[in-house]
Length: 443
Ligand SMILES: Nc1nc2c(c(=O)[nH]1)N[C@H]1C(S)=C(S)[C@@H](COP(=O)(O)O)O[C@H]1N2
Ligand SMILES: [Mo]
Image 1 (cartoon, rainbow, N blue to C red):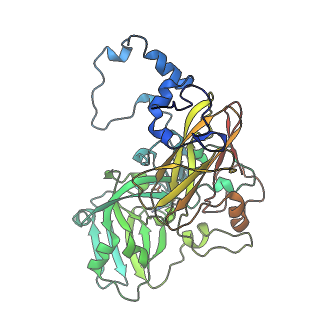
Image 2: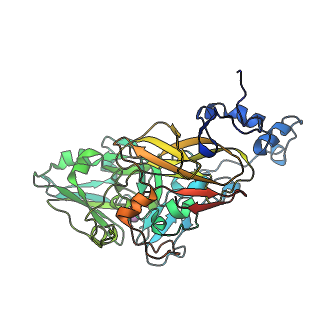
Image 3: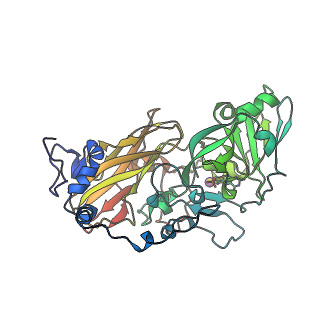
């Protein structure tokens, strides 16, 4: 190679390597990263280089027989801080939220024990051998399915995110809330779900031509129920039985849930026990009150099913301050309830200039896509932001565009649960000051 790539030798990156303002680097840096870090004069790279010069001494843990495998393996004790944050830790009889620590994860799959949950009346302790799913209403032949019976139908797996309509609601505040990505965006997660297509079961029951909707109901105390257009059943709705390869977690709907990929979390009815085909929506509590976003003029959406295109940077982000100037990878997740992510742009100068990030494949529709952007922080102020596009051509709005149509709260809101509005999808920006401290800022 004729020319050394900076900042491998600690110098500022050359003009050729810069693709946008304030140190965003060409994506080919991602390929040559081992070389970049090994040669760097600062940080991780410096200590990695000097370690290589000394003989490798056995640490304490290299000298003894290790621990014995357990039938269910716990994580390393050093990972104890990687956990969900709870809105109702004492289990009071009200809604509880557990938020995913996105800033401490990588890749696209949310581990089952860290998948976010919202349960309005607690997770029921369902005996799978007793649980039944009934499909009735405008069908030719009502049917009852036990778990055993369902498990004999053809199954399929798909990656899908589930996102609460209330995710990111702190961003409705007119002042940026100083909280981390877990507090702001922790009500979305992504998993591989396996189950039986609802359309497969409806082929068995037959569908009355008058049917236009189906109403899904859960077996928990709240008997949460939502109306879904029948078209979704014929498209990609799944009766999910497995989550990342194992049976669904109790918090996520054990032993079965409705998965309506790309539709707001609340419609993904957990502990599913009933599907009724109807000619009109039921206008249940959750669809007529909680999940109808209100507009600035006081009117409200009747329905708002799709979680629109969105992205956020998980690293660097609030709470993960930068220790010294040098090379960093900006990384985060993008997703759209409409389909695949087609492009993510990143800015390091608060939206003055943008460069396209590398998208990590496979690009699954209605699922997380991780993006990567190489960056050289010169130690000065920076504002990091990401903006996503989906294959249908939808673009994540700038905050000013979003607020103009969807509004914001009148007062800054301190309580993270006190935000009344839904479906926030504009861009998140992290301000970096010259000490490397990161705050939430608006651009
Ligand atoms: N039966 C039932 N289904 C439910 C809920 C519930 O409390 N009970 N919560 C809903 C809400 S508000 C959301 S956002 C999603 C969350 O799914 P998760 O807990 O698997 O992340 O489940 C939905 N399905
Ligand atoms: Mo939700």
